[in-house]
Image (tube, rainbow, N blue to C red; front, side, top):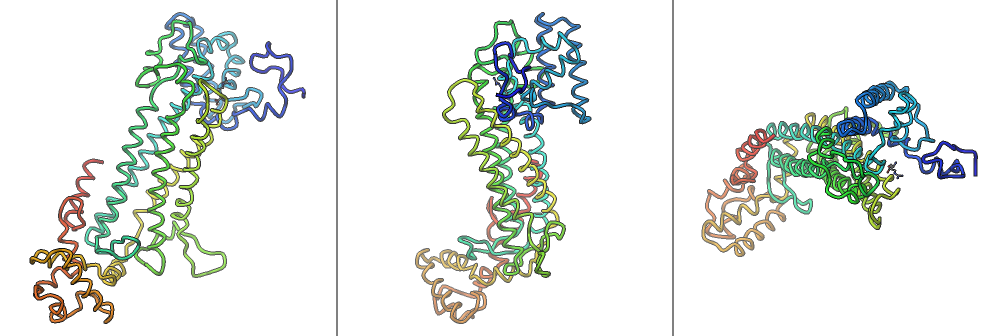
Length: 461
Ligand code: ARG
């Protein structure tokens, strides 16, 4: 046992000072000081409510306001003395408040516990960060729409199994990414509904005997309502798990974008050129231009999913109500927020400068018999059963492979040797342009359809 602080929380109950290592081990102030603005916001609302119900005089309330304002300025200016002895952000601020204003500072914690306080702070913090995330996400969506518009007519191979499947437009491909982000945004907005509920008033776990007005506090803090059950309020972090799950899905999407960008920027594909400002060179190979930004984003997706796993494991097996385990929720939450915002920002900044190489995309689409399905559909429209048409086209593809020619490069006579139903209008469907233009239904890849989808998306944004 060391001589560590004797001025610990509830010190009267203890006859031994906290072990110096335990003091450091249990403290969270190094990371939870990040929630200071929310902690102060919560205290202002709590003091307002305590005064309204007659627990604090107006003079006490006002002196709490003045003290908290000064603390907030000290923190912003970097002059606040954070101390490990005061364990966490809540105790640090309260101790400083009492130092500044005396007795009124000691009354602030009436009818409140750090358990409902911390749950409130995290919710306030996440609420404001989710709004920031949605704003950056929308910036990326806009960038995708602009690029898709420019590339609405650009033909490229569409892939399944990473094998050339059917021709599509680059604009259509970009709009697929856009659609993923639409759902990502909806998920965040939905999550916000469950984040924005107020735990304050649950106190340690059982509520409080003071005649608190939880509706007033909720209203002051912009929460949609007070929570329904005090035990649940101080305990569950499911809202944070849900947020981290939503963040993991976004990162998974960004990781898929990244993978395609990395492939396409390679000399083997050469479909796009990434902006120099988003790539780096190699320290040894002078010719290299590495797609570092998408690679890093792809890597960071694992990190965020890791945080989701941490939070799930943190919560599982915890009995009601609050347990100190929950202090471990902060770092995964903060890092998820930072990582997600940085990755979205990197993409939003990079996407407008992605340069397409339409000639390379076009010749790649020409290579893989991408219009084979169109030929089968052509025969079906002339009266052949689809399975038979599939067979006929398979034979035509074989001839193309053997003679190293695309279907559109076979002669009419050669094509007719596979089916008499084929006439010279067949070349309209064998062209890449004809193939994409024919797919005009909702969700299809035809350039005009893609432009319509972009317009609809623009008015929804
Ligand atoms: N620092 C704590 C946390 O992050 C605050 C709540 C502590 N409550 C308690 N009774 N020890 O969860």
